[in-house]
Image 1: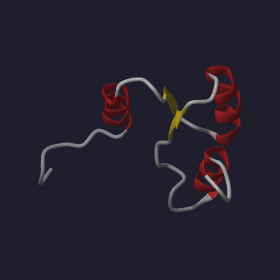
Image 2: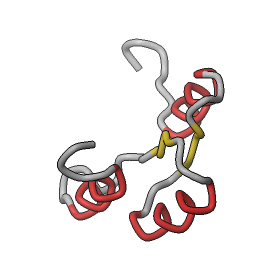
Image 3: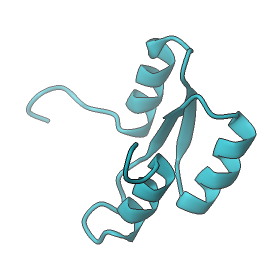
Image 4: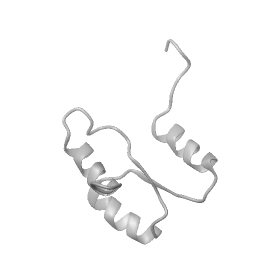
Length: 72
């Protein structure tokens, strides 16, 4: 991200009155240890490494923010 990185965005989301409860998934090519360390500080909820299948990311999204059938 040109202006700020995803960790800064995650921190801003957590500081927001309206967005603080939104689940945050880091989707990154960074080393897992770095994401875990910096993600803990930014209060990121989960991590999926770029290069994995998108199925991995979709499963995390479904787990973190399940969507019920329309109208429920």
